[in-house]
Length: 368
Image (cartoon, rainbow, N blue to C red; front, side, top):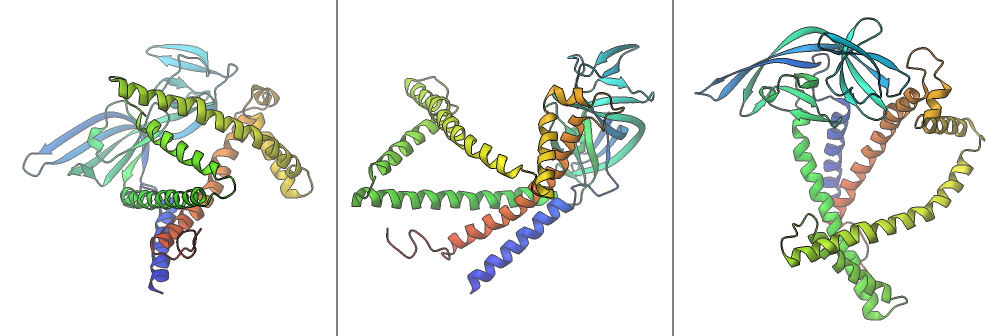
C-alpha cells in the first residue's frame, strides 16, 4: 500500500510543478521589460564578491510580425541614410533598424524564412540588479541569432547591443527546472534499461527454445551489437585506423541504414495516413469541417499561393500566412502542452511502478 501512496505523492508533486511551470512565468507578471541593451555598468565589492549592476535599455513598446516576401517593402535605416527594400532582402538582419508606416522606428529581433519579429522602439529604462555567487534576483532572456532564447542569471554578463526578450525579478519557479529535469532523465534512463532487459530476455528465450521465426531474434542481437559499435564512433576524430572504422560504421548506420529504414517506414505509412485523412476530412460534422478548414489554411500558409490569395487585404493580420502561424503557434501549442502534461505524468507513474515492482509483465510474474 505504501508503494501506491508514494506513486500518488510523487505524481501529485510533479503535476503541481508542471502546472506552475506552464501557468507561472519565470519573470513576475507586469514587471518584465523587453528591449535592447544600451549601457552596462557593474561595480564589484571585493570583500563580499557581490556586484551591483546597472543596465540601461531602450525598451520595446510592443512587438509586431511581418511576413518575409518580395512584395512587402520597408524603410531600412542605416546611419543617416534610408533605403527602401523588401522584407525578404538579405541585407535585413537581426538588429537592423527600420521605419514603420506610422513613422515609428523598430529593430528586427528575429528573422527566419517566414517572418520578421520587430520590436517597436520606445523610451529608456534603467534596471538595478544585485549579483551574488553568479546569480541575481533579476533574470533575463537574451535573444540569440538562431531565433531562440537563452536564460541569463547574471545580468552583468549582458553586452551592449544584446536584444532582451524579457528582464525582471524572477518568480523562482524556473530555478528548480534543472533539478526536476535531472530526475526525469533518471526515470527515462531506467525505462530504457528495463526495455533493453525485457527485450534481451524475450529474444534470448526465443533463440533458446527455437520458437517460430527465432532467427529474427538473432538479427536483433546482431543489429544491437552493430549499433553499439556504430554509436561509439559518433563524433570520433579519424586520427587512428580504429577510430576511422568506428566513424565509418557510424556514418553507415546513420546515413545508409537508419535513414533508409525511416524512409521505407514512412513511405508505407503515408498510404494509411492519406486514407485516414480522406476519411477524417469528410464534412460529416462541425468538428470535421473545422479540421478541414484549419488544415487547408495551414497548408496554404506554407506556399506563396496563400500570400497571393490574400494580398489584397489591407494590413498583415488577414494574410493566410499570419492566420496559419496563429493556428500553429497559439492553438497548436496549447493542445501540445495539454498532451505533454498528461504524457509526463503518465511516464513518471509508469517509471515508479517499474522501480517498485508493481508493474506485471515479462520478467515479474511469468516465464517466457
